[in-house]
Image 1: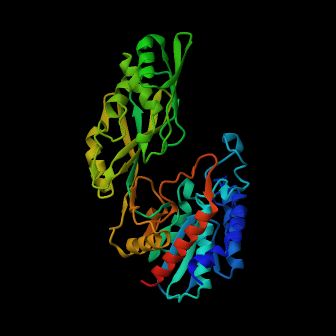
Image 2: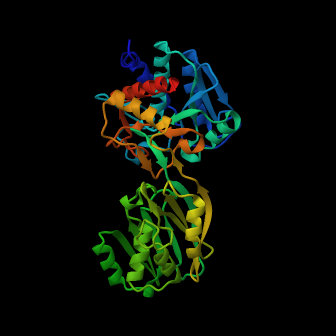
Image 3: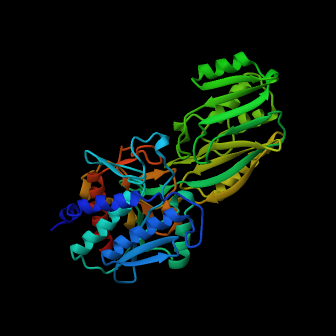
Length: 453
């Protein structure tokens, strides 16, 4: 028997297990005793651990923060780090099927988490079973670590590292194939107005998404209505403008995108601010925003722009609001992998304040980077290429962040195949059954190769 044949024998079980996990709404909930992230994530973890316990693996539940299933012997530890929590979903969002009832159509599965990341976790379960079935000598321990808080801060993984430490060789099946050997660093910040005549402003939902909708309320006579309309029309920006007594309410609709690729979106805040400036509005906050951000996504006007051979810095303005006369908004920066946070902050520090507003840095995250010729990278890449025959797709550096940043000696390895959009975090999330089986084959092959190191 070979790896592929053993994996294929688990087709029905893979689908059944994934259906059981998808049925659990494991979006972040209200913490309660014994359920630090709410009852849904707890139930998903208990369900997954029960599967592995039934299979005869050693299982450990770390206070419902995170858990793991293990096989093998030895001091060295191979870690597979996936997550069972999901982002929220509802049929009313525009799903064609119920998001928490897995539906199969012509070999494709639909449901929240079928790709991100429950499908990959189940594929990893099957991979471990296949390695055991094949009787591969186990000179190391192999541990499937299953988190419940990846989508809302990765506190579960931090809890794991505090309790159990890191791994010697690890991969997280929550990125892209062939593999991700670099993840940009991050800087989170906020900006605040010092003075403004704007009456109200509100836009965006989360800091790591390009703002799609923004509303502003201001006095009618502070800008040219025709010039603003011309600006929006010339830039193909959807808008509404309604008079309310002496005031006018303007709503702008842009295009959402992830903060790691803000150039793929159209930021409603930015087009609104730049439109107002073009229309003659001389409000101090409008000046501050346009002077520091404008329509750019590379941080040039903010004084933060930089790049290396693997990519350039990106900057996203995600959420804006007003309280007690002060406007505040969020900034999400992803900086190149060969830089460090201290360098970026130092470069930016001379551009953080003027007479109209101020930027305050809230947190930083260092980048993740493995040389492409390192043993972990070459071993996983060999496994992917051996199974798929794909030698054209190259290892990636990304602007997003994965579990790999939270645990040593780990990189993102799958689960997304090249040139596929699984509608992760979107309506009608999907994955093909054959691709899940292929994932399992790749992961089993990777485990076998890591055991040989």
